[in-house]
Image (cartoon, rainbow, N blue to C red; front, side, top):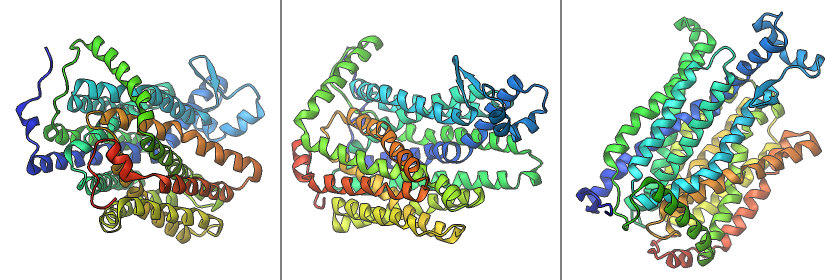
Length: 477
């Protein structure tokens, strides 16, 4: 028997969509805690010493654990062949462990996310899939509380699982955007969602930093404080996910196979048709490539900002963490600002202008003086103003150039273009460092991504792309 949508799913009135949108915004508020608290701040610096503890117990058992961890790099350098941890039979340096599990998580997302998108569109059970992925990710994140001592593999497995679930939930979440907003509403809805995400992630990070910085006053040792902070991100994610699950509604889909195995098979076939069908939407493909290029520049700048601050500017971790916190709150207003500018000047012009600003910001990296925290804060402030808006408006534009009924599939392609291209920016930074040994030059090398992305986006005929996908062209684009 084919699935039928519940009666409420048929109500597409403005009030019904507004109710859904309010719930949709809250999921950005919920999941941003994982990215901000766990990935951006706490997990990497915590997990590497855990891996070092395991290596110490294995290779330097006569030494006190704390002493060994503090002098680990010197011990490993003086004892070739020692100072590794075992990861499924491979010897890995503890310092490389977090990078390894991040690479594994990205690789698995590239394989898995298109299947998630195809399955979501094929079954129509987007709300259930969103909840399932969200709670798997949230529970895995809460499980990080138990990563202590030498349990580096537990931390690695939980992080990979949480990261995979996070990316899967975002694919399903983004695919709701065309269903809960009209073409005219799309920019504002996308921008508000992104802005609220920055606000939620920043608020929890601020609370966690109160605990972390004031841990002595709370009678909590450093490792316990970090574990509580990471657990809180999972609890935050799980708690606020309840709201979108109550508000969002599934849409009816055409009749399809009812067994789980048949549905998965149908999803793979539909995915193949999506990839093959991209040839019928060459302008959608051009936009996807443009986004891939300039968003890779955005992600690489953000991912290397802490290293730039410590290596090029010689700033301490307190400055780095406080800058991350500032970015969260400024990006909230920045996303709303660019959304308003898009309504006045057009979405494409606003994104192009933001790419010009990105170019200027990274070029300024040559001139920020060593040890000047204020100059770094100003650079971070400028990035925050364009960060959320660039991504939110790009999501809005992409939602206009994809065919109706296949939103999750196409948004999975957007996600894997993001994940799959991540190595290009990292490789560019690596080559620049190898040739110049300068993080300033490495950051400035990102200018090429913004310039090429600008050119490709400028060449994309968006009204034609929107009409080709069967959608209405907004008044301002």
